[in-house]
Length: 322
Image 1 (tube, rainbow, N blue to C red):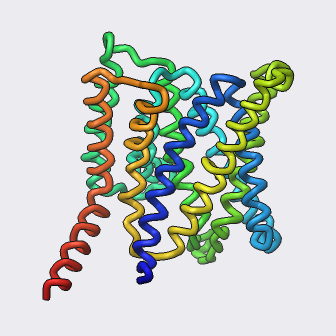
Image 2: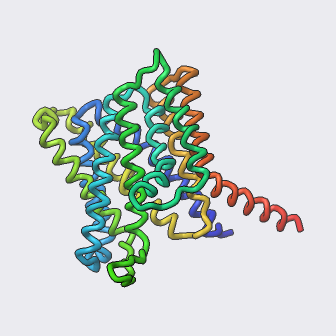
Image 3: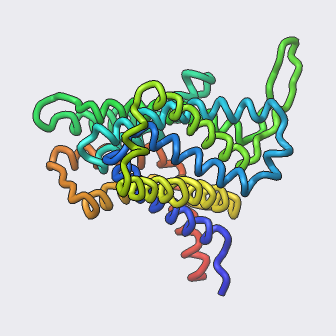
């Protein structure tokens, strides 16, 4: 029996969250062996080139404006990823970092309000104080003092919120009112082409930062260790980046009625679980409480989507019984 497209989409998005969580493990292993920004450069350049090969037809049809918008999104994403990888480099808890970074989802409506004057929904204002309480609990362990890794993760979350906003605008048609009331339509950038340009741009941004701030020679002269580094880079680029984004794009194209908005908040939970199994990480009761508060903030922020999913499920159950 063939599965409905919406069910396929949901299952694929669960796989996406698992790939994202595994990518945290790959990245943590890599930054223990090589400069973090150099790792991001190699990872994203390789992933972007892979997707460019897949989407070369879309890329050839793009005009200069679409390329420029894609590059702008990539520059913001590259900045966010630079802060994120430094948080992973300096942070003591991968799982904790995943919950802090997930706050980017909560901050998206706030960033849209600040930059584009959009009105955030009520759930955002309800989620923000809950998220702040969660961050406070994470910083209370051993006294009220935030770790350097936590600050990097928090900075990345705020920039991720801007990235999500710009990426959504680039991937959708937009109506623009110019001077004199003239209305024009800006065409969306095809998803695969947008993703490949964004990833390559991230590689260039992090590569430039690495060239200015990090030593490269020890990494490329590490002998047998270089094979291990190459393995982590390739695994991160293929499974953790190219495959993840390709599956996400494909899943979102299968159905307009997917539960993806809700499913994607599973990522920090998978990451915390894998970090406990992979690195043997443990958290204090206070840290666990902070992660729980941040997850609650994600649920509050996504309450509208959760309510629609529950209503659809209840309606389907009632129809099956009738």
